[in-house]
Image: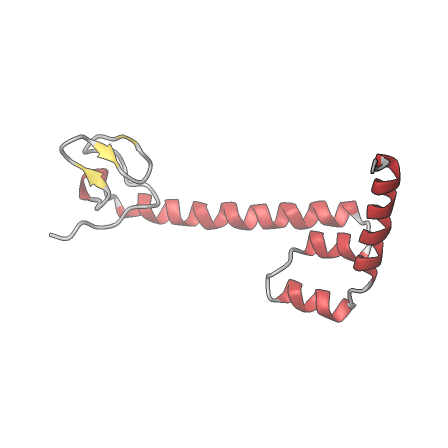
Length: 118
């Protein structure tokens, strides 16, 4: 029984459209609000095509993540801690277990810094 790839792909496209049309806007909105589904995938699922808004949302999310990491790094730098004071620093090998790289005693602490128990 030979299957025709063109017919099969057309059937799959029809089936996908039928499944997507069964979504209720309220259900999709609830999934986005619960952070189960991204806004971009919800737009795609509902057939909305606003690429400019999708790009703006992605840029906003990326900026929020970068700001979060920048705040953590700034707090660590402001504290003046060094790698030698960190729980993740292996003094015998001069190695950071988290970043998996060589580090010296006097390197500034990174955002993963945890005070070692004394």
